[in-house]
Length: 123
Image 1 (cartoon, rainbow, N blue to C red):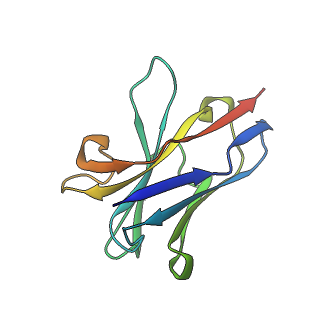
Image 2 (cartoon, rainbow, N blue to C red):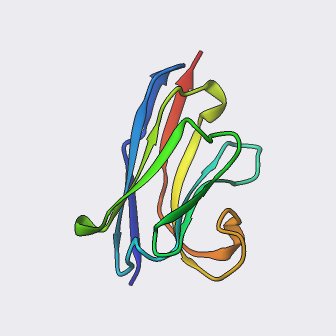
C-alpha cells in the first residue's frame, strides 16, 4: 500500500524559511510526485510537480524562485525547501503520488495523498 507522510510544517514570520518532507512507502519518489497546498475556502493548488524520473519539476508561478523541491532517493523522501515565505503561502501542504497522466500540477490526476502538514506564515 502507498503511504505518504508529510512533516516539517510550522509557524514562521514572513521572509522566513521552512523545509517540508514527504516520506513515501510503497511508491518510489522517482516516479511522478508532487506537492500541493490548500487554504480553507480555496481550491487545492499545485505547488510543484516532478516528472521524468524526478529529473524535472514544474513550479507554480506563485512559488517559482522561492521554493525548491529535492529528492532523497536513498530514503525515498521528497523535500520542499521554502524560502522568502509570504502570508499567502499559508495553508495545508500535501504530498501526492499515483499520477494518472496529464498536468503534474492538477490535483485530480493523483491517486494517493498524505494527511498534510500545516504551514502558517505571519505578517
